[in-house]
Image (cartoon, rainbow, N blue to C red):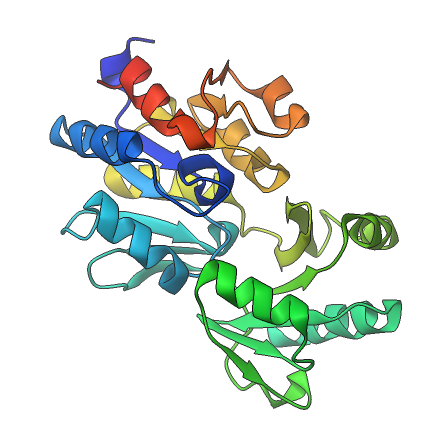
Length: 270
């Protein structure tokens, strides 16, 4: 496919669009602005909340009318300037409580997102490091049953060894009533079954009147698999998981710190 036919690019955020140190390379900023000037839509597609993504959308100039973002691993698709949601798929409280109860029984410390609000029952070092990294706030509750808003997702931050054990424990239910996946080596998430980056990419493409074949999906980790499978052109960054590279149409020569997303835009859009 000729590069000028790509009209929507969806990029993961952490370790893809930004560096491991959470910095947005200038090369990516410049390339995104040039791509948009040519009429190509660009959307950040992240597991983070929309509030946590905001600072990067501002740096990229994505706060104008007609710009969109994808948060919570595809659960939410929203207009960036207004933050209005055009799609909002949530896990639901009954299922979230069932998952969190089993996670606590397993000996891990789950957290819950309801909208952009993060709720925790144990204020520990993992919480403080997570909120520092994603620049968000949290509310301490005695029980998740105090949450009144509908739950978006459940997350667990722990050592990779512990999370692999956790994944095995939930394996017979993954792909059934909900999704469970790694979004980083230290982060495992549970979302609604239909809340994936791939379904969000296709939803946004249809909303914009863009064929799926004219989309690009760029990622680095296992929560990007659905997006890679759905996109017209699938891209894994150099520093990404080997499993993702093996299924991608293109693997970048640059890593996230060198402007991997800029490389994709320069090669296939500009």
